[in-house]
Structure formats: C-alpha cells, structure tokens
Image 1: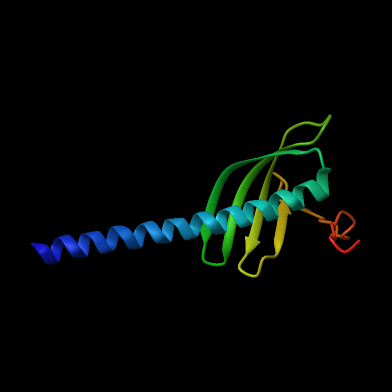
Image 2: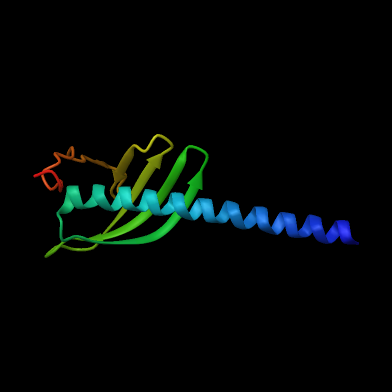
Length: 110
C-alpha cells in the first residue's frame, strides 16, 4: 500500500512539473506572437489569445487582433521549436512580419 501511495504521489508531481513547463513555453510563444502581430498591424493593436494547440514541432495559437480603428481579425500564429514565428490570417494567407530594427532599445550606457 505504501508503494502505491508513493508511486501515485510521484506521478502527480511529474504531471505538475510538465504542466508548469508547458505554461512557461506558452507564455514565451504568446509574447513572440503578440510582438509579431503588433509589428504587422501596429503598436496599439489589441491582441487576445483564443486557443493553443501544442504539437511536437512547436505551438499553434489562435489570436484575435483588433487594430485601432479597424475590424477584428482572427489570426493563426505558429511558433516552431527554434523560435521562428509565422502568422496567417483567417484565409490562410501568410502575413509579412517586418524585421525588428531595434529602434526602441533601451541602453543603460547612453
């Protein structure tokens, strides 16, 4: 009986740590997607997560984006294992993400 209790406790703890790790990666991926959407649609775009689908190669995120003065748009953001982000609109057309130019970097040396 004692062995069964220890094994059950071990499985619960292992499941909890895997869930915490997935949550951490989801936050990173969501931040990458939000940054990409704001670069495409503008800084004042409201971005809300609607769903996450985790797969072996990365994560698919369904995002609702509402640009200032524009209409709501459902987007799919894909972040792969290497951190590359791709965004597709509801028709499946890829959106061009401009490169980050570093213009808003803050430096303590200046």
